[in-house]
Length: 153
Image (tube, rainbow, N blue to C red; front, side, top):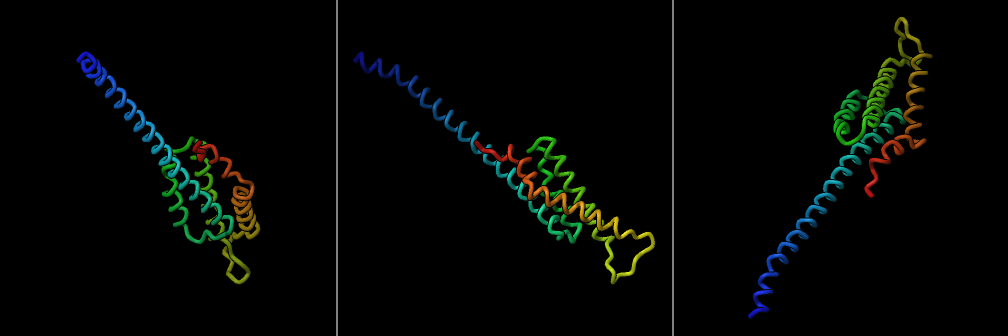
C-alpha cells in the first residue's frame, strides 16, 4: 500500500517531465522549420539574382518587364538579408536598366542615325555593363556575397 502511494506521488512529476520534453522537442522542430523556410526564401532570391545576371551577361535583356519582374521577385530581400545584399540587388537593377537603355539607343549601320547619336559611347556603355554582369558570375562575386546567408549549418 505504501509503495502505491509513493508511485502515485511520483506520477505527477514524471508526467510534467515528459510534457516538458515533448514541448522542448516541438520547439526545436519549429526552430528548424523556420530556419529551412528562411533558407528556401533566401535561395529563391539568390536564384533570381543569378538568373538576372545570366540574362544581362548574355545580352538577352530584351524587355524592361524583366527588370520589373526582377525587382518584384527580390523585394523580400530587404527582410531576409543585410543592407549589403539590398544594395547589391539595387546595383543589379540599376545596371540592368542602363544596359537596357543602351540597347534601345543602339543603332547599327543599317538603321538611320538620329541627331547627336554617339555610337562609341553607347557601345562602350553596353560593353561595360555586360562585362560587369559577366564578372559577377565568372568571378563568383554573387556567390560570395550570398554565401553567408545560404549556409544552413
